[in-house]
Image 1 (tube, one colour):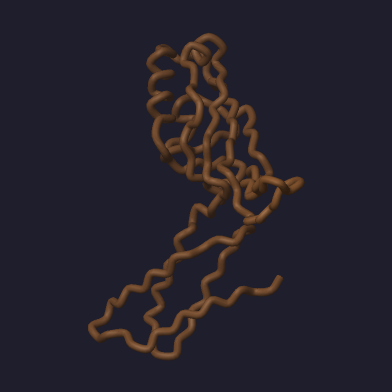
Image 2 (cartoon, helix red, strand yellow; image 1 turned 180 degrees about the vertical axis):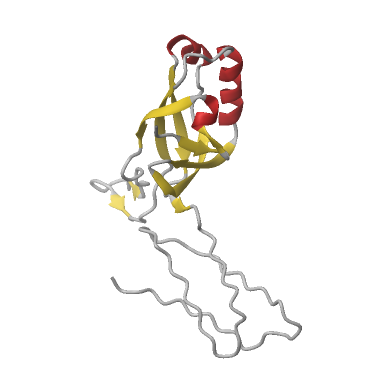
Amino acid sequence: MIGFFFANRHSTSFWLAMENAHRPLLPAANSNEYTITGRHGTVDFGGETYQKRYITVDICFISNNVRDLQALARDIAFWLSGRGILYFDDEPDKAYDAVVHQAVDTAQIIRTKRASVVFECQPFAKTRNFLQSINAGLTSGDMVSVTSQGTQRTPCIVILRNTGTTNITNLSITRRAQNT
């Protein structure tokens, strides 16, 4: 049975299964195009940026023996409120920063034992292990390579911590993009 995690809870902890997840291949691109008075058409400045991604998850109850469906529906509503990390059992290495975008009707859940949940997500998934920690005990002249396995250009943050007692001097950080 395939489900999903959101805000550190799995859907099966609420007796829910995922019937379907509508995950668009790409989010919609942002338009960076302008109309200039007296000029035909528009001017497109490009930009290669994207809008938020909307993922719709169709859920259903996996048990008919739920005693207090109304209370469980309220627990589900509380679970789905706020922001959290969203990832799916069939893609456990991809995570989205998400928030529920549309209201989930508790009456629909109680009546049909089914509902659709629309998550508003940042445009691209990230690896659930997106923080790489290198505790190498580096010394002068050492080189460390950090590799991103992503499919989109993205900025990164490098945090260096001096755990020693002497000052670090003459530090050099070089970014090298690999040609593929």
